[in-house]
Amino acid sequence: MANGYNGKILHVNLTSGQMSVEEPDDAFYRKYMGGSAMAMHYLLNDIPAGVDPLGPDNVLVLALSVVTGTAISGQSRMTAAAKSPLTGAIGDSQGGGFFPAELKFAGFDAIVIKGKAEKPVYLWINEGSYELRDAAHLWGKITGEAERYIKKELGDNKVEVLQIGPAGEKGVRFAGIFSMSNRANGRTGMGAVMGSKNLKAVVVRGKKRPDVADKEGLRKLAKWGVTHLKDSGIAGLGKFGTAETTGANQVLGTLPTYNYNSGVFDKWEAIDGTTMYDTVLKGAAEGKQDRIGRDTCYACTVRCKRVVEITEGKYKVDPKYGGPEYETTSTFGNYCAVDDLAAISKANELCNKYGMDTISCGATISWAFEAFNEGKLTLDDTDGLDLTWGNA
Ligand code: SF4
Image (cartoon, rainbow, N blue to C red):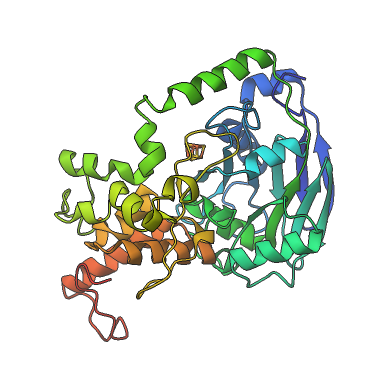
């Protein structure tokens, strides 16, 4: 088997409960490699024409890349793909965290999921073995709670849990799939597809590290990255997160504002990455945010993930649910002309708790803001909610 891969794809039929392991040859891996390309192979071959995206015949693929699980920055990513209930076309969404690497360690390069379970289940993959377990007691639970239950049930705090929230269970068309309760395969409604299959979660644990052709070369490269990061162009991404790009978009006139009727937001500095770093990141008040207000994905030295904690005021925010990316500050912020970082962080927390894509959710809300401000929606329509631009 080529380096980097396990040489194993797990096939799960939730209707019959049958599971099997495919062991493709090297030619397959050379052709489809992993991630979206490998996922498309299964989608195009296995999904019947005209399939209902939320029906049992849709196929959900979770696929890793050749480098996932190696000890170098940026590799712990996973594609989730299926026919999208949001667009009716191919849905394809990437997410990070520790789940992708752990799935590789657990012995598989991809999971192909078909059918629909009779009752809610979760898939437990442990060191190459796999089983479907009852998830009736987890159905309806928010992500943080479900994750806690699963870890307790399996007696292992180090399992990685990829799951849907109540939004995915209820078929919200922009529901995502989440790990760590704050890392999202957010786009194109993959959480709704998973929910339509009665699959609450995929839980993984493993210790098998992928083989690498030149271990020493990779180690040197990773070390070079650590040494040069602080002087590189991505040092700011690590320190200020993806919301660092808010100012650049403002300058370019590409900061979507008023539901993208404008490309500039005069209050952008209130919600950009620097302000987030200085105010709402966990530990910011004591100057400890670099240590406790930033998080990472497996083996990544960049540490761009945000951890927001707000303990006082109108919007308290639980750090378990992470912090907003640029796309989130953008859709809940400038799209809606909202300059309140605490409110935006709360919206991010709620989306991660209930399992919704922050981009589609925020953009939909900004559409409602525009309709309200144009007089197309009234207070009667919104049950008294005042959607005047900027009202958080
Ligand atoms: S910490 Fe940031 S840069 Fe590193 S893998 Fe995760 S998302 Fe990518």
